[in-house]
Length: 132
Image (cartoon, rainbow, N blue to C red; front, side, top):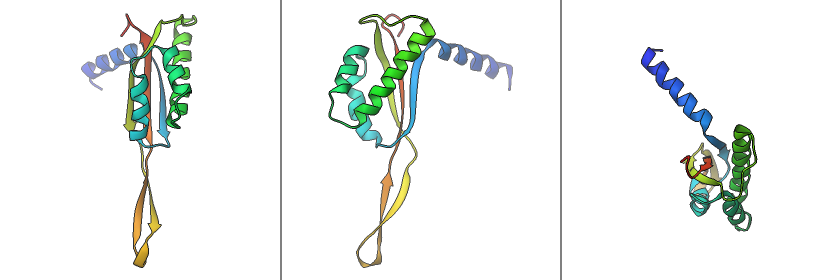
């Protein structure tokens, strides 16, 4: 690796160490359904976001709630203290498409219809307002 790439890679590593985040990969629901729930909590204070996710009727909210709890625990681990009331916010929340399982379903007259079982990848960053 060249010197320039090496320096840039080290800078990215240091920046990533300061961020508190959690990732969930290959979550078995479509990205479109997950984005609907993600839009509800993006930019919210974490306690309010947990309440919103807990009382949402969407199945995707259970996965997102568990991921948010993990991100909060990561922040507390890195900073060595408990998060105070109204201190942490969901800074970024991205939902990307994951791998797709392709299946066939029998159809009339000897044909087959394709079924696509989609999955998604979620990345959730938490931080303080001053540390956006």
